[in-house]
Image: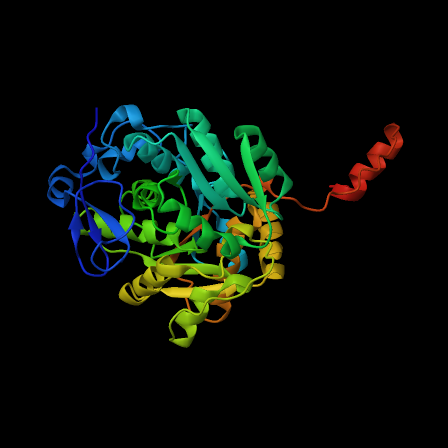
Length: 408
């Protein structure tokens, strides 16, 4: 079986190192922790370290030591789609979509749920919990059930019906909360300290975050280790952005790729604390937010993770942007009609931000740009087309076909 090359937990602020235990912050400075790996082995053995398919193909760069703990529903290995027609519409030379909608619960969250639940098993927990605007709760509930663990899921009262139905199906402990994510997460985080359940939230758990790093490894493999010039990642608290950037950084340090792509953080304008701070050159100021169609991006106070995103943006000379709900819904329709990809509003916010940045001449359209589209559209609610049917005979059916398609 493939071993994990994880070696330590390291504080991103003071550099303090810790053994690979269940620890959520630095004892010295309360900074966030990240996992470190045996880079010399990565450099020496190269991608030949990887075997199998799906997320656990990358077990050497994930922190789960015992293969028996590597829970799976078949996540990972999602397509990297070349989208020439949409590229032409946006005026981009080459556009790639890393579409995570085909994951088992239809979302990128399955990558982090796999490593979160595996870590819960690794550290002997019997119960998990998460505060969610929809996708995370749906995913954590499913993976907990797969692992035989109990899950306590706190779900946003305005989460879409398909997400709520999925959560109700996969956990006996679904609690609907009033308000938005920011209203509950601080209270819930205090309970994490009591070790009542395994932390499956996005705020602090390095083991959970690590699963999303496989996005970078897949993109690299799917481009023959010549990664795109630009990668646009969605940002709420920042887990997907941080993990993807870390994956590319590891590969560069191991000599697998020549450079880290320019990283772009994409937010909804109604929850744009990080993009606003980046644009204004200020610290992050938490926002009191309402509803956004991009439910998965609805975090007004990204906390320490948000500060980490801002630091990475400066260190990597990246970009940040945001898009209004109307722009997100417009590009959702465009993607479906032009490329046949039906993605949810949270998933296509990255595309809406890309279009804005291109219009503002902040990105070079001659580059190869990869956009992470993080969810399927099959878990969101939208206005139904009319269900009023038409009765046809041969002549009326033929007339309709000719009208729609033309006599040619």
